[in-house]
Length: 347
Image (cartoon, rainbow, N blue to C red; front, side):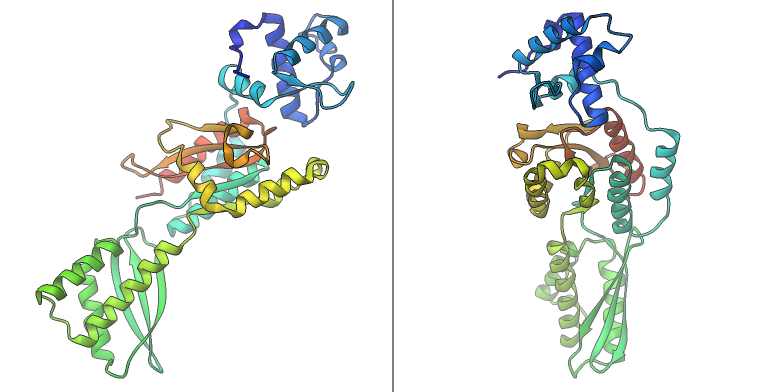
């Protein structure tokens, strides 16, 4: 059924519909006519309210899960609500402070991504998700330290200050002077390049005979760059924190849906592709239940927003995933604020 434009509802029906949706998102429970009748803003008898509720149910905007259990919004009803009726609530001063403080400490980008995912989970009560930036790390400095027993510690420093270490096996031809030559070569010739660019430049110099490295040094540089390149390609594209939040008291009565949702989260690549579809959005996008094939069984919702680097380029997407009864009005601005705060850390 196509979603009915909210403007086609009477003012009375719109107000009752809004109260039902807001009450359901607040409590997670269907809202009955008696509850609505006790609201001073609705000057109608319980019988008149029941009549309006029946009309809204016939339009496919509300559903009654059980007899005399009140009404709850359908997915179509939720879509109408978030697109045309939702009153967005700005993050509280406490929520704003927590987001900004958790993302204020300088450090590796990976740490900031972890913090962004965690703070979204903590504040929303759902699972937080952050896509790892697609841009590759650029080299700033490189060093190799002899560990003895045929091993060396390769230390890579990125332009954003991130530091990574790898233990590299050495062959018998390599000594301290070889490690020094490799360190000087990589730092002086390959700094400022991504791993892919560095590997291409290295192969080009070897092919044209322009490199001044001996065979042992070339081999060590090639193997070292290959290790980092393989690591970059195999890293998870999505960081998920707070999946345990999905197992709340209300989930116990719908355990199959939650199990399906957790299975979806295990397939991080598919979830990442969904988030990636929000790259072109100016602000948060909302995916509700079966509107997206991925969550057709679990009936889950995703709120996602792109985050940009300091030059305004979109480098990733973050968001939350949870049941369709997410408090959209509260979570949407929270996701947007986290995206802006994270973007300030991305160079």
